[in-house]
Image 1 (cartoon, rainbow, N blue to C red):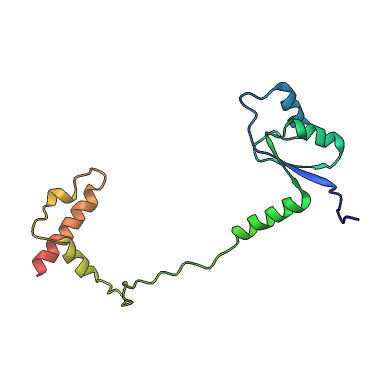
Image 2 (image 1 turned 180 degrees about the horizontal axis):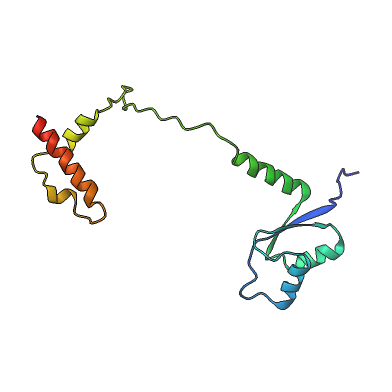
Length: 144
């Protein structure tokens, strides 16, 4: 004796849209199963009538047993569960912590002998912020 259990319900998922070369007969079968949108899922009884209807639209749907469907849903849920936050360490390749520059060191690094005011604020949208940066760079240069 084999120990097989009879599947009571099937889960049907519409994988292809109705537009294109879909016949009227196929559309009526999908509407009778209430499958009108892509990725919509319906639970249908495992009877010869429904299996015959599903055999005609097998190219458009995915058919799963209840255990297969619930296992897939559980795997999907576990995939999107809360994960530990990503921790970033600012170290170099040899394990030494990278130094953090002060604001003044940052301004000094931006300023170099070839910098011109026209280069910094060429775009019209960032003209004001560019002018403020030029003033900050100019005051940093004067303080040296």
